[in-house]
Structures are given as C-alpha cells and as structure tokens.
Length: 398
Ligand code: UQ1
Image: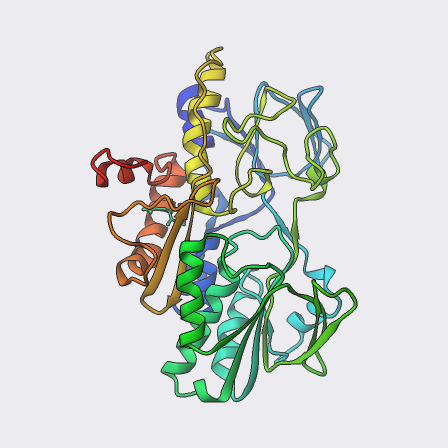
C-alpha cells in the first residue's frame, strides 16, 4: 500500500512505521518445515523491500490516538497523520501454553512450530530424526493466521515419512480446537478423504493446554466436555500458537471490537468510527480467513477507497467480497487451491474443479506465488486474481 500511495503522492508523503529489520514471506514457512524450501528463501532485508519514495521510521507504534490523528512510538515520538492504514498483523503467543517455550528451546525435545522463523527449521530436523511414535499437530482456538497451515504440515510430514520408509512407525494425530476440518464444505469433503486415505487421526474440538517437554507429553482439553483432559505422548509435537493483535491495538477501545481487532466496515475497509483510518490484513475484524491472498484483494479495495478519499470523494466506494485463498498443500507436488468469499462460497480462479489435488496448483503455490509476491505485490502491482478469474471465465460467473 505504501508503494501504491507514495507513487501517487510523491516522495516522503507516505510514512511507514515498522520496527523489524527483516521482512518474511510467511506463506513459505510450511514448505520450510516440510523440507521443500530453505528458510533463507523466505526473507529479505526490510530496507530492500520498502519503497524508496516512502519515509521509513524504524520504530514501533505503542499508542494510537485516533481522536487526535496521532500515534506515539516506542522511542517517544508523536507522528501526526491525515490518513492512516493499520496493518499490524497478529502476534504469536507461545508463552500462553505452559511448557511450550521450554520445549521449543530445549535441545532434541521434538517440539517445533512452523509459525515462527525461529522454530521453522526444527520441524524438518525432527522429521528427519524421527524413529517411532506419535507425531502430534495442534490448531489453537482462533484467531489463527493461515488457518490451513496447521494441517498442511500434517500432510507434508506424512509424505516425507512415506518417501523415507518410516511411515509404518508413525501415528499421525491432528488435534484441532475447531469443530470442522475446514470451513468450506467443498474443500472439507476432499480433505476428509485425504486424511482417511492416509490414515491420519483427526480429533475436533481438542485444544492444547500444556506441554511437558521432559516427559514428551502434551495435555489437551476436550472443548465439549470442560474439565476432561487427555495426555498424549509424542515423539514430535508441531504447535500452532495462540495468536492475538499486539498491545497497542488490543488495548485501544476506540479502535477495536470486543476481540481486540481493528473494527472496519467489512465492505469498504474504512474504520467504523474514524473516517480517516483504514485497515488491512490480520489485525482487522474482517470475517474472512487471514491470508496473504486476502491481503492482496484488500489492497485493490484500499487503492480505490483511500485513493478516492484523498481526492475528497467518498461516494461509490469499492466493496470487498471477503475473497481469500488457501493453497492446501497435501504433499510434495500436490495442492488443493481453496478460494472463497465472506459467505464461504467457492470463488475459484481457474476454469477447472479446484476441489481436487493438483500438481499445477502446487507449482503456483511453491514457485509462482513467491515471485508474484516479491516482484509485484510489494511494488503495489498485485491485487489478487479477480481480473484473471473474470478473464478465464470469459465474463461469466462471479
Ligand atoms: C494470492 O493472491 C496470494 O497473494 C499474494 C497468495 O499468497 C501467497 C496465494 O497463495 C494465492 C493462491 C493467491 C491467489 C492467486 C491466484 C493466481 C489464484
């Protein structure tokens, strides 16, 4: 968004407040955990990806004051704005599960997590070192960014074990706090067949409570039966951590809904109480799955709506349909490309049934999307596949 608007407004008219030194392409973390990509391929120095025309303040927002149109940074600076886009994402709360951080940090504990670049390499390391026993995968209570990722690694692990002659020594167990395997029926139907065919145990509404790294035991609760817990021995435990927005946003009642998310109009992406504030991505309360593909589609809506507001025009705002996409990698070279909208209705780009495993979709996910991201999206040129979809459907359909 900074690239788009600094081209429109000119040098240093867009300010980016961003504390990190490194920018990560998080959609690739799953493939790193599965041994199909290297962690170095997922990152670039922040200085190389931010647009030259924008002014980068390398600091963190610690307080929003939307009534004064100001933010305060960690170093104590006050920054005034005419318009603001909030894009602070989600934080990973590993420390909320007792024993988890100890497990992740302990040598040879078998505890790993694709969600943080600090721990992603552990996943493949422990798969390579696996000899026998349970391999347990978790999905916490929402919110979760990329809600497909916790199960993609189950499939990649299964694939790895098959290809390395170790499958018969492993019990694969996927424990999810959700009541479903996937929220869109069409793709859930395929995924249930995949887990059945590949002998993966799925337990719904089962939430990780504690990890005992020295005993290699994880404690789960049954969300349907409060108080009932399960102790599961593991050789490898892949954890998706609980997540939330950061402190500055979570604690700001003016900006957020009850859950700590930036409260936006779900069509226009404008804040419901402050007309000069917009939002994008994982920190928002938009009722769709939190993915990079959703962010790409939201970019197009913000370009129109914030662009119009900058020219003093607020009629005929563009409306976001909730488009999101989840490339469900089911093995090396196999992927189901789920694409859907706010109503959980499939909204597929390609004129073929995307509810089946496909090599072409794997190529798109593993090799094409990273190029689109680094070259086009970060320079303001990728707003999701809606134009491709319309062209490929020759103007028919949605
Ligand atoms: C997409 O737009 C996107 O955003 C950059 C992704 O993130 C990495 C994706 O994984 C996908 C699948 C899309 C959608 C793109 C097409 C061509 C269907």
